[in-house]
Image (cartoon, rainbow, N blue to C red; front, side, top):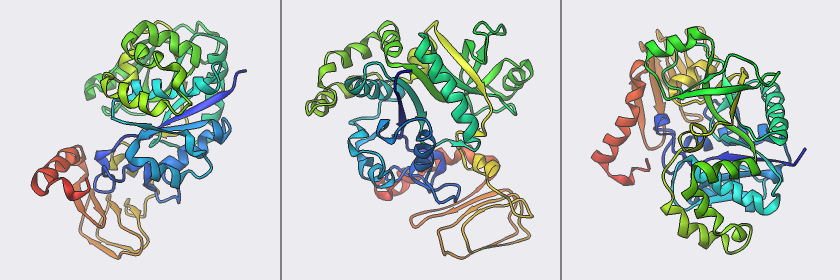
Length: 361
């Protein structure tokens, strides 16, 4: 089988995890769960089970270069790919693919977000290796779909064909559906042929370029015109020139929803996109009153069902709260009902309007 490269997408801001996640220091660089590792470090360690650290690349905005380098000393600095502008996942993945091509035109590639949680790493490795072998042998674009446990409205969904045409765990994709309302999500759950879209993709470099040329011709041409510059000193100036002109497009919409060669592997390896503080609650060990506590000096009285995150060594006394999010940082304090956590994004906008852009958000 051809060599395996892994790409970590680490350019997002994660504003729903404010005030911990900010534009200066996004959530992928934080130890959100209090495990001793940031989400980026967890992702890198997990992907190191699939390939050599020298074949793991991180695509991020250029303002985060130093943070990535500091958190991942085992990865060569040249493997930090710096975006000059934020242009969503299609240009991000195309950039990584062309860099990989400069090292190994026959590579297989696995792409993963930097800020997701996977608790069963052994099963993740098994399914990823199955996907990589399949990508090496076929012209499939493969994604990993998570077996849904509830009618969640925060995820996109993938519908797969009932018949098992490949003879194993791999199913052909029928449709992609963006985040549904709760009634439709319940129908998806009941049908048994829908999966959550985990945003993890596997394919061969050759297949990706063929599909990109067919379905995203402008993006393909932008990068192809400078294919010989990648991996050289000319790469930076070339990318700085073409990247801002790339369409702001996701790989899901730009490629996966258009191709006829998309397959999915149903998976169940303890996945969460950790998109909100509420998702943290589901994955954090709770105290006897159902509180998720991150911090070593928190006292609770008559309080239950809360998420409380405090800086190390800061004392917090919480009395009489029920189902609240309490997050304290050096620059900001958030106290919000858990049922209203979807409003946090608008809170961030209001903070910027009220107090200016120098708030570090």
